[in-house]
Image 1 (cartoon, one colour):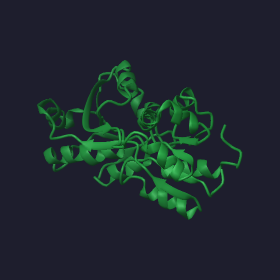
Image 2 (cartoon, one colour):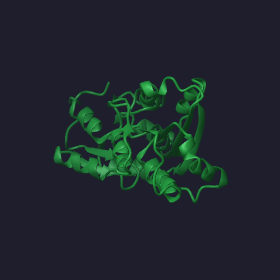
Image 3 (tube, one colour):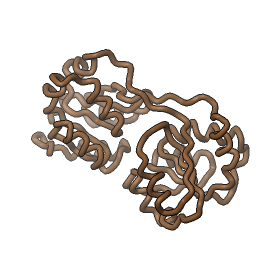
Image 4 (cartoon, one colour):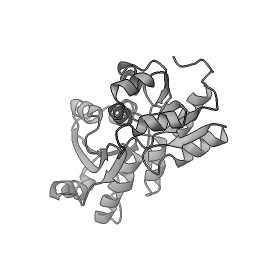
Length: 257
C-alpha cells in the first residue's frame, strides 16, 4: 500500500489512541472509528457476587482482556481490600497483564500467542483436574477456554463484568468513511469487530471494498475474513499495537496475501 492511503483503527473508543499515534509517527494517515462498543455491567447479581466472595476458594483466575481487569478488579477489590494469597493470576495478553500487575499480583501470560489457545498451552493450566478456575470476561464471547478447561477436569466459573455491542453507526456511514478517508488498510482487533464491520456494510458496499487490506490479530479472524470474501488479509502475531505495527511494516506495495 502507499502511505498516502489511510489506515483505519477500529479499537473501542479510547483504546486506539496509542496505535493511531504510532501510525502517524511511521508516516501513515491514521483514522479511528470504533467497530465495537464496550459497556460495564451494573453491580454483580447475587450469584456473581458470591463468586467474588469465594475468590479464595479458586486456584486460577483468568482475565481475558484489559476491560475485564478494569471492571472485574473493581468488583473484586470492593469485596477484598486485601487480595487472597495462593491464587494463580493469568492475563491473555501483555496489555492485560500490565493492567493486572498494577493491582499487585504476579501475572502469568501466554507470551506471543495472545489467545485462549495460548493460555491453554501454559503448563500451569494443563493439569487442573478438580481445581477451581474463575474466568473474568465480557458477556458472550468464545467458549473455548471454559470448555477445554472443563474437559481437563477443572470446575470452571465465569464472571461477566461488561458487555460488547455494535457501534452506533448509521447505515452507510462506515462505507462513506472508508471512501472519504481513502482507507487502504483496516486494522481489526477481534472477531466481534470484524463481525460488526460486515454487518455495517451492505452486500454492494462489501463488494466495493473487497480490495481493502484487512490486518487481523489471529488465524481464526483471518479465516472469518476470507470466508466473507476478503482476499487481502494480513495476520499479525497478536492484537497488540506492536504486533499490528510490525505486520503493517512488512507489507510491500503489492502485498495482501
